[in-house]
Length: 443
Image (cartoon, rainbow, N blue to C red):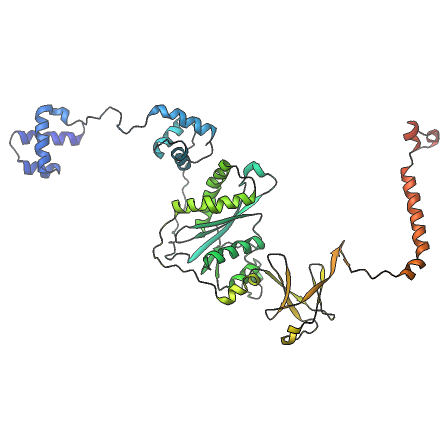
């Protein structure tokens, strides 16, 4: 018996001997008057047995049936070997209709040596930054390379582009082959068309987003392509100094690597197109519904696009580079030569030699030349082939061909002789022994 049980026994003895009243016992035991009268009657009948709980030394009424553990352990070994406990518990209820609490499942798996207990590391305590109050005020953006399709598609490595709202933890993601400028432009162009543009984007100091050279940190004349596109749309960028600064998106990457890989394994997805469809239509709505948090304020800080921004959206999300105009109004770009032509709409522009012209390479790989945000007409004059410019051939001249006919015939005869010599077999190949002259040759 515990000390508390002994105290209640003393009070009940005093109550039966009329030493104290019901009201005083009520105050001492912190019980109502009706409960005191009820307990008094039980104490008279059962005496000390009344103090001991009736379920002591007996199994709980809510105890899980131990016969069902065999089925759970078999499922763990065969199907759900690499699932975490929360995910495994959800799958048992969803697909196998087995209801079990996480604590009992964890204890049973530890008992059967199917789950390892991780030791917690002692970390330096840091101050946690509060979530933003408004919906879509700040968006944390990151990318992650991982074996998303495991060994089902070994020739193609995928990269997940992920954007997470800081206030509500709502996620938007897309699979692509890499994280360079064209996939990021495609991701943000689709995002802005669907939900309008955010105020802030929180990302790392990768070379796609920021020039990391010390001389170019404060130079506004040397922005990256992504920085220039965000400036045109009036979106401000915040660059994190470490992964802990944007820990929300990093944590989301970890959960996606844990859950999304297994969900795609169950459906047997083997290519990037089906992976994007599964991610957009099935996984993300279910994931956001479960893990989203309500924002502190109900206002939405997304900014709608202006008419000018809607018209020039393709121009904004394109790679810009400047080139000098030559004397013959040609421009060299990516080892190709382009000729600019005069047009009726050119009355507003005057071009000079060595004038700077912006070359825009759009996401559909079309190239445009512009000055003062207005396009110029152009034509591809020369293509690159074997590190040389291959100009279009001149029309055939019969007189010139007759003059050089003899030279062409001689070259053809020489080529024939070379081919015949190549086709001839050696003495060794014919007789399968060395030539008799070989014995007189000393090496």
